[in-house]
Amino acid sequence: MIGVGKIKQYSNVLERPLSKGKQEVSLSAFAFLFSELVQYNQTQVDNIAELERRLEDAGYAVGARVLELFCHREKGNRRETRLLGILSFVHSTIWKVLFGKVADSLEKGTEHEDEYMISEKELLVNRFISIPKDMGAFNCGAFVAGIVRGVLDNAGFPAVVTAHFVPVEGQQRPRTTILIKFAEEVLAREARLG
Amino acid sequence: MAAIYSLYIINKSGGLIFYKDYGSAGRMDTNDSLRVASLWHSMHAISQQLSPIAGCSGVELLEADTFDLHCFQSLTGTKFFVVCEPGTQHMESLLKYIYELYTDFVLKNPFYEMEMPIRCELFDINLAQAVQKERVALLGR
Amino acid sequence: MPTAGPRSGDAIFASVERVNAELFTLTYGATVRQLLTDLEEVEEVNKQLDQMGYNIGIRLIDEFLAKSNISRCVDFKETADVIAKVGLKMFLGVNATVTNWDAEGTCCSIVLEDNPLVDFVELPDTCQGLHYCNILSGVIRGALEMVSMKTEVTWLRDMLRGDDSFELQVKLLKQVPEEYPYKDDE
Image 1 (spheres, rainbow over the protein chains, first blue to last red):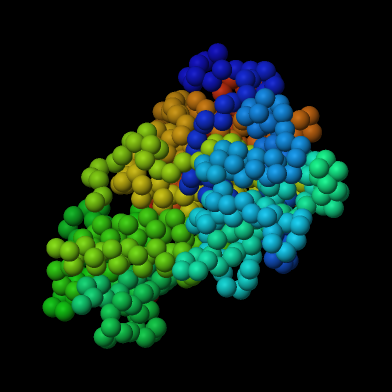
Image 2 (tube, helix red, strand yellow):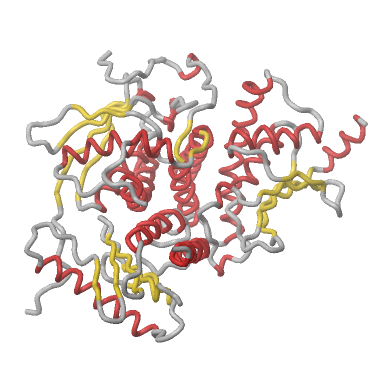
């Protein structure tokens, strides 16, 4: 091997030891990539709802993989089977590894039994993004909503997950709330488990 | 008393993509600001040609009786300049900092189109703070 | 206060805000997957990835200049060195070396010691023609174009295709002199 670098060669990705997840890249590298992902998707849609859906799809793909990876690495191949357990796994473990911090809050919806909210004062993906006025309530957090849905769905907790800007009193900028609405079957199962 | 009168950003073809007026008196209308921008773009280019030093990157400071004009041009050709009270300090570092804000809140914004006028709320918010800090630094001396 | 003189890639990477590489890797993976679904043809995906990289490059160059304090490079050799030692390090945290210079000093290889884009990736049989990392070559091409260098950037070796490392060839096509922005009124 004309070894200029230190890369160990593995003929197959499966033979490589799983990374410990301590590697880092600059926030800028991620921000430029994410920005381009949004720009590309804008060229593929006719309206904002479609853009939201496509970003959510991209996030879903990330979420599905994150669940597998983290359950294996952080939890010794065990995953949560109860609603509150999986929610706190998303709010704490997933958030901490992906975004470097635990999410600001996890709350139960006050009006509906099947709704939960994860809120963040400033979502990492939105750090550098200003939404133009003509795009209304659009939130690039749709990507993060997709990640959450990807995790939940693949863990057996199907849900509708959406991202919303919520104004905060005394703050110039709104926070982002990821609204999780669980499927009926999930609530029914929880009720049975007691 | 405001030390900074106004801030301009010109794209590499000389188009004014950002203008902010901080002065309370002598505000300019849109046409005037466009005129100043294109005038400065030309003068800056001419200064590069006239300079006896090869590889001169153009005027960095213009001192007049009633104002100073500090200019920073990135290697990519975007110009940032402030018009301020004569003798105002720290303008080079302010411009450098504004350049960094531009790389964060303008260039990383997927809804910003290159070379077009800058309409980014986060850029405005952070810029306002930067200019404010600069004022505070001046007041504190 | 701005520091005088250029800063090293390590120093910049240590001082900037960083994120978990897996977020980056998986987001890139999701991007490639979208392109494969949208465009179907692998060759089209290669083109689109290169285009997306270019779009990033023309924006990212300003951050690179602002954070590195680098002034104009004297020649293409210095430019290639700066990409390898400072650019790749400050954004991706990876080390790279410049090698295989041609006699004219207009073509060289950048060999990556690590590549966060490809963690977890294995090309399926249907995607053997995919240049999975094509975004990176686009970034370099776009960034250099903004500082007046027209280049052609191609992958010579790709570990996903069974090679022993990642090697990018950067070829200087044309150095566009800075143009005086006026035409004579003739």
